[in-house]
Length: 635
Image 1 (cartoon, rainbow, N blue to C red):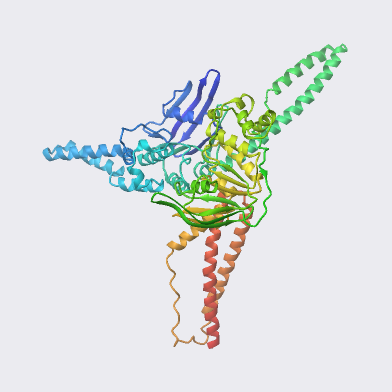
Image 2 (image 1 turned 90 degrees about the horizontal axis):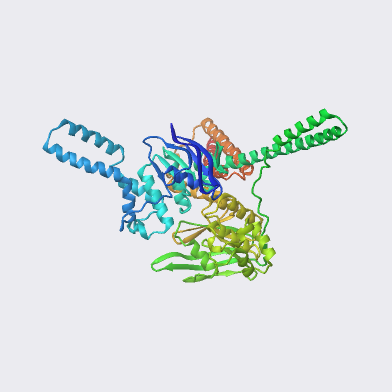
């Protein structure tokens, strides 16, 4: 069954500048589709057309009859005084209407024995039960817990929430509505890691259709099974996850480039032949002139192919200052509270040179506050953060602010950096601020563009501690890759806060998890940390293994009674050997899949399980071997 059918969609907001130019897409029921494209490519416009907020100029759009469609970014206006709980409760409006009608029918049946009333009551009761009318509280609590919507937040006025919080509440409302088609516009932007993983788990079991706009590559890999990229207003289709899309897009580019170069070589060959024919024509050979003209027309037909292009990679690098000393940072007995709420206390940490640390935790746990204390923008209640004498910090905050947002980009660079006008323009060009863009006011830039400008300004500083607070938020995929390229080339210390698991996995060699007012210090990658947490959870939930029964002291093994024990020892040895071989295989697989973070995550998890299993197998083998020795000695 086709849920969404879009054919030949055209939309322009400025005359002669088409955002969508013949965009076509078909989405089957139950599909998981990722809608990608540069900022401004028309992704959100497609969603707004699907929901009827914007009308298309040309083309047709149809939604399967009876299918309910919900858009995450579309936040309805609610009556004044509505709390978060009131907003969430609107998801059950259909059930509330059924319940009210059931009450009215029950009252009417008490006054009349009309069979039609009883039939309607039975039918409505079945629909109410099938729709989950008796477990709305359970569903609401489950979704709220998954998306970190606390009891205190539920009591707050919806109008008082931030834009990000409203988006999160709206996501919860749409999930509770059990919508048939979910349109997700950057759903993970305002979610912490736990809430994002909960959403991924929910979507995995969701029976409806999902179309998602997202720059979260990990989320895309976990959720979508087909990618649609908007390029020049049209749809380019990729039948696979984000990882498949990235590889296939590069393959298609190389294929087009190879075809283009082949055509250029053919054109050069034909042009040389045409030139020879024209020379012969000058010598009186009239027939060759016609052949030359025919060949030139053929050249023009071939020349219609444009050279394939892709974004240039970032060429700038952070200026690095050499680090001297044993300790880059020492955190001693650090604590911070706001009112009665303690963010963290008793934090003690040491950082050596060259370490790359991800500071993780749920929203509101105090990650950004920790960075602000480091940057001396906040004062701790107790304790201190000591930086080595040769440490120089470069800081990219989550919310970018400029002292004079009314200045244009060139003047901003000249005011802040020691450079000439031409040097300022050259540096801005590296970060894709070119032409008239450099004369825009800073205040006119998007959030992503302001992050790019601040990053451009950082490149001039000689630093050895780079501090990033949510560096990839609100950036498109190209901009995320630019930042990653810059960070990859940087060799100093790195401390960053991020919910971008792709970024975390790529750079973190150490994880600081801030939760329950304390920081857990884990030395390893993000995948290794996840495997460690999973193992801890398994051990916590595992049932205690009963001790093996010991033979009574008075019982002596009978002569010739060791055969069964020998069989058990050999079986235990084979099991140990099998587990050891599998452990070696997993180590090899981890090396072979070092760049595939999803596969690596599964490999680490299996390796942890195999290590646990091997530990128990060793214990069983040692016990059986000891029993065998004792039995042999008693013979």
